[in-house]
Image (cartoon, rainbow, N blue to C red; front, top):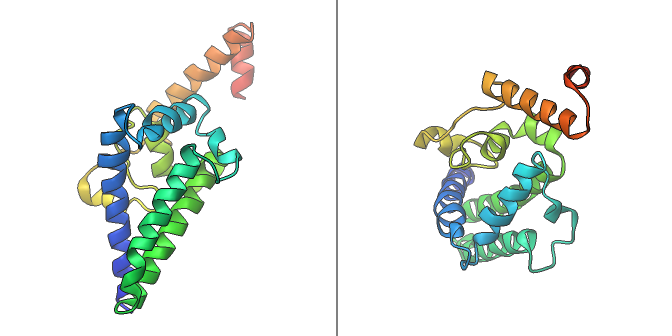
Length: 184
C-alpha cells in the first residue's frame, strides 16, 4: 500500500517537471505542440481573471483542453503496465492524472473556487511571476524546489486589484468616486 503515497509524490514531481520544462519551456516556441499552454491558456487566464473559455467547450477537439486531456490519457496509459506488479502505485498515478484534469478545469471555470482551494495555481496565473508555482493539484514540489511564490492575500495583490478596479471604472467612463464605490 506504500505505492499509493509514493505515486502521489511521484505524480506531483512530474507535474512540476512537465509544467516547467515542457508546457513553459518547449511551449514558448509557437511551432511546438505544447505552445497552446503558454500562448493561449496563459493569455486567456491572465486576461480573464483566471477564466479560460477553452474549458467551457467539449473536451473532444484539437484545442487546449483537448490537448491537455490527450496528454493525460497518454500518461495514464503509459503507467497502466505497472498495475500488475505495483497496483497501488498505478492506481495512484491514474488518480493523480484524473485529479489534475478535474481541479485544473474547475479552477479555470470557477476562479473563486481556485482562489480558495488552489491558491498556488491562482498565484501561477495571476501573480507577477508566471514562471513559478508550477504545481496545480498540491504545492508540494514547489515547496521542495523553492518555486512557491505566494501572491494571493499579499499587499501586492491588493494593490494590483485596486489598480485593475480603477482602470475598469475609467474604461466605463466613471471617475475616481465611482471607482471607490466599486471597491465597497
